[in-house]
Length: 271
Ligand SMILES: [Ca+2]
Ligand SMILES: [Ca+2]
Ligand SMILES: [Ca+2]
Image 1 (spheres, helix red, strand yellow):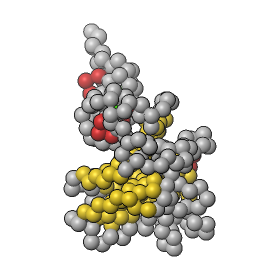
Image 2 (tube, rainbow, N blue to C red):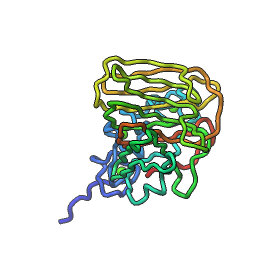
Image 3 (cartoon, rainbow, N blue to C red):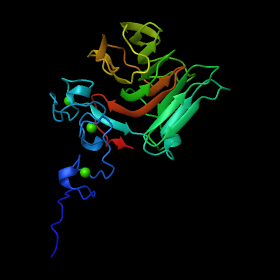
Image 4 (cartoon, rainbow, N blue to C red):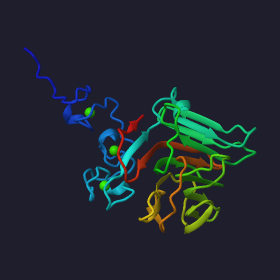
């Protein structure tokens, strides 16, 4: 007799009962925030949060919506570092001439370590067809870091001329006595919060939103002891490119998401 086929309506080889995205083909079942909803159908793929809590109805869940009450945000890039072979096409590395930072992509992440003689590495997202994501995006990053001496930052704008710390940013810096979280613009901190109880080696997750001239920008950091949030006022609009910066201490970036604020939405690149 014939066995009943297990229903699999998206034909990805994972039966509907067990499929974390039953309507979207995702044979890999990747779920980087481990909330039970697969990345490609998760309305907030980097933050473990209930699906469908979306006050402005723009399909970006409140927990990660850069503009919670204004519809129009959309995901343009979700990078899980799935392909080591494609890493060089997906990310541009900038550092000081003559230095050699260590960039070690692996399936599911990239380990970034700055050169011992120069403490800064800039990682700029590309679309895979040779173009940077020009303009201003909201950057969200899931990363593991063992901050002991230095910092990691998420940026929405870089100075193209040199790997300088410029643009609007969220910075997380371990000072030796506490964790320093700052937001600002062009290397000027406009809001600072210090968490004295930071435990060296804690995983950090950074969510950074700064994209509109009319809404507050926010830097949110989950360091395993709760969410620290710091808010800054409206920022001047700025052109630039998006990605992240790593300082002395190595970090493992596990996933990066770029959101396009308040405009037309292209089909997102998911890789
Ligand atoms: Ca599926
Ligand atoms: Ca998920
Ligand atoms: Ca929303």
